[in-house]
Image 1 (cartoon, rainbow, N blue to C red):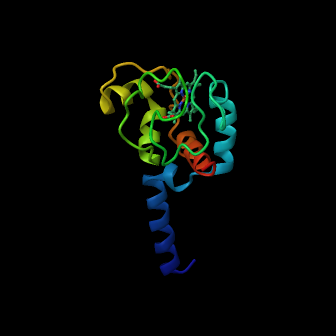
Image 2 (cartoon, helix red, strand yellow):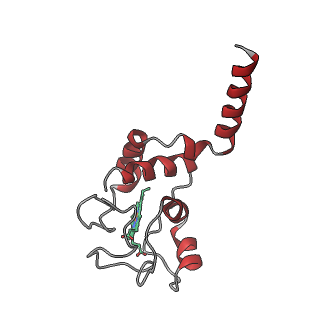
Length: 127
Ligand code: HEC
């Protein structure tokens, strides 16, 4: 490897190292995460235990015909990838910090940052 390409490699490695999850987000892996971790409660096209998630990226939070919204009732924002990441990591904490509600009816937390990045990447493809 030439000195120049080594430097380029080192910079790329450093960038991936600091924000690896976001850089490596993978929709195909995210589909598997969705099937494994989310479909117990969510489908893309209809409400189950939780609201339909097809097209959720860019959608107004709490806006489907789902009847049992609790934490997202009256939410005044649209879901961005950043907000989704914060929400899926800890819905209750998100609700306390970002809405006037205190409780969340989604209790599941996805703790793995890379799985969150992947599942959000997948959800983007459902728009
Ligand atoms: C145990 C059931 C359950 C699981 C598992 C679950 N959710 Fe949820 N989810 C809910 C419920 C219930 C709500 C409604 C929350 C509220 O209003 O307090 C919700 C709301 C959401 C919302 C907000 C949708 C909207 O219309 O604003 C998103 C996004 C979401 N879930 C993503 C996920 C993802 C991604 C996973 C998998 C990693 C997941 N959920 C796993 C039950 C679940």
